Picture 1 (cartoon, each protein chain N blue to C red):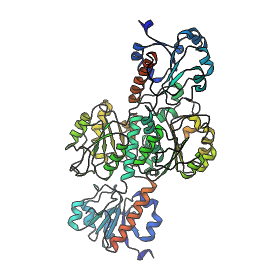
Picture 2 (picture 1 turned 90 degrees about the vertical axis):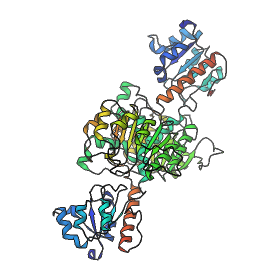
Picture 3 (picture 1 turned 90 degrees about the horizontal axis):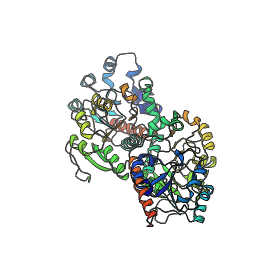
Length: 319
Length: 319
């Protein structure tokens, strides 16, 4: 019966596949290079004739090399909102459609951004360690935190996630500005043309933009120094938007107040120097990892693969 | 010169006094039993004739015993929003005015409630430990969290803090209900007459009410079981509103999903059994501890002591 199901190449695989493997497998026949002893390129060559659709996570680069091995490929569904791992130029050239998670993860990502920000400002994780170490009884008073309300927050990238962050922080009384590829016509918040300008007028930066050639290492030493030594940066977008070496250097020199990082330049490798700093809060690329978003992405992926094979319109097509 | 300043009895002392000691001491002459080798009751007797005003923290019970020793006392300024440590009945009888922090701490307390809630739902502190222990590289995927949006949240006590919590959680898409001494006339959220009813219809309880004889141990095993085994409780009010023994028992039996606790029944003592549980996030009675709120409370206390000694109206007079 599996032979009658449409073939889908599985790359990664995405975490949502593991959660819904049984349900996915009732609808499609997945080709799994990860479970094969054959090297990836050989595996792809062997199945080149039958692979029309692929389902991938953000952790697997879909390069022009890979696309060349798969001449029949016509659709890539990524489980991520980010699409920086896919060679979109090559996809366009080859007539390969690409769809992503659209705004499915936006609210969860925005919630995590706010959670990390409150954690850094109010020292939640560090205070939790303080209590668990029995230091409350021993030392008494714990250092003061900083109030969220009234803080000048710069949103870096006012797409779906950035807008959800702004909406939330607005309810806390924050003063929002943003930078984005373009000034948004119907947005009341002040727009800054450059990240440098945004950092100079902000106390907090929340990074919500896509990773592109333009945003790679966009937040470097200059931006951090413009934000100032009490400044806070939250990153729930992609690690490489921040120059991690510059950030670590500034943290070690006290040139920045604190950071909340869900993403890193070389995941899952995190520079161990971060671990010793109480003003650094880290989560393992977990901003969108909820039971609810996984249910939603499962339904989207099944719907889009069905749509592709029945030649009906895709949701969240980006190429 | 200190002799010309009005005497103020200092009990606790409040943390804000330590932060602003120099400024406070330029305006008032503080009598400090904590720094004296004389026992408290003897110290109070010695100064009974000259103590008209006291400045205290929530950690010092102002009992009828203490009030009897101080027949000239006419004003108690507490640095806290809670007033459960003061025998208000005795104060009324003796014509002692009492003022508290009013709504000065409300926003900070509400921010911390939201921070603790996101931490518990999205496992922020636990995920931070996971990264710091190097387990991301080793184990890979971290367990899924739960989405905040769409959750049914019951606010326990819709005063100043509870209203600020509701306003914030509304922006995350939560579905709010509340219980309070009385149904609020101009509030759109559904009202529940009892905590049991609120727990039964909620997935999350956020405790924001005052500690009184009526609210002592209001959240017990029955309420926790009504909330259900995936339920979450956040407490930024007073520890004794929850029966801590029942709570611990339910946590150990998996009869509740998780808790975020800023307050405990016997602070700074925290049952060590809490420390081992990944679904428990604790802060050391720190919900209002920000630089900004300390500045505000400093200004309020100085203003109220000035007002008392010059016989002009007090801010946030509760008795």
